[in-house]
Amino acid sequence: MYNEELKIKFIRQYTSSKNMEEVCRNTFNATEPYEIAWGADICTKSSEELQPIVEELIGVRIRSTWTRVGVLNEYVRWCIRTGVPGACDGMLNARPVGLDAVRHRMVASPLHLQVYLDSICAPEEMATTDNIYRCFYWLAYGGVDEEDILKIKCKDVDFHNMVVHYGEVEIPLYRESLAAFKNCVYLTQFAYDHPNYDKILYKDRVDGDTVVRGIRGAASTKAMRVALSRRSKEKMDDGSTDLKLSYFRVWLSGLFYRMYERERAGIPVNFAPAVEQFMEGKTYKLDSGRNTIDAKKRQFIKEYTDDYERWKLAFSI
Image 1 (cartoon, rainbow, N blue to C red):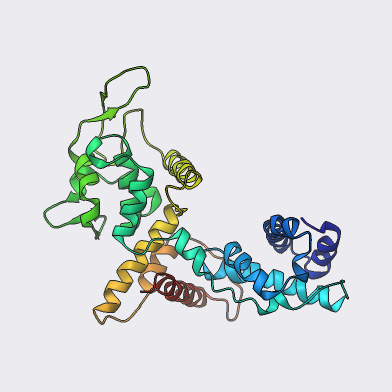
Image 2: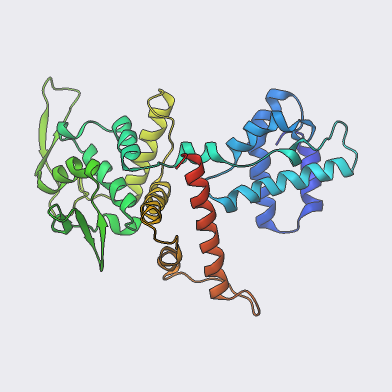
C-alpha cells in the first residue's frame, strides 16, 4: 500500500470487521501502482485524474463496484476531516460508471464471443483440441452450469433443432458455434502439432461420449479454467485481444444477450428464473426480521437488473 501508515490508521478507525479490512487492503493495493506513478496519495488527486483509474479498478458486477468505490470515498472523507495535507474531494466527484470494465470483461453477442475465441484458439477447420475450449465457452454462454459442462454428451447436441438438451431445458446453439460443436461431436481424432515432427499428427480422443474431451486424459473444470486463463493472458500480452473473459463473465454475457432478445420481442425483463437457478442448493445466513430468503432473492434480482442495464449501456445496445 502506498502511504501505508496513513491507510492502516484509516482502516483501524473505519472497521473492526476482518472481511472489510481485507476489502480495504485489496482496494489500496490496487491503487498503489497509480499512486507510485503520481508520487502522491489518491486522496490528493482531482476527479479528472481519478476518472480513468476508477473505471479500471471496478469490476463487472455493481456490488463489487460500490464496495471498492465506497472504501475510497470514505478514505478521502476521512483524510479531509483529519487534515491530511493536500486532501481534496476529487474522488467524491468521480463517476464510477464502469463501462470500460464491462467492455473488456464481457461480450455483446455470439459474434463478439466468436471473435474472441478466434483470437485465442486455432481455427476450427484445423481440427485441434482448441475446439473443446471453444465448446466449453459456448456451453457457458448458453447457460450451462460450470460443473455440468463436462457432462454434456454428444447425443445432447441437436443440430436439427439448433439446441443442446440440458436436463429439463434446452439451450441455444448459435450459428457461430456450429463448426466447433460438429468437430467435438463427430471427430474421433484431433490434430496434434508436435514440435519434433514436420507434419501434423492425429491422435485418438479420450474414450467417452462427452463433447468436451481431448487427447490427454479426462478433462477437469480446473484444467479448462487454467488453460483458458493462460491463453487469455498470452493473447492480451501480444495484443491479439483486449478481452479478459472467464466462465462466469461468458455465462453472464449469454444471460444478458438472451434477456435482450426477449426484451426486443416485447417480453418484460425478468431475472427471477435466473436468480432461482443461481440460489438453488445454496444456503444463506439469514437473520430474523427483514433478512429473509425472499429479501435475498429480491436483492439478487435488482443486482442482475442493474448489471444488465449497464451491459446495454456499455455496448450501446
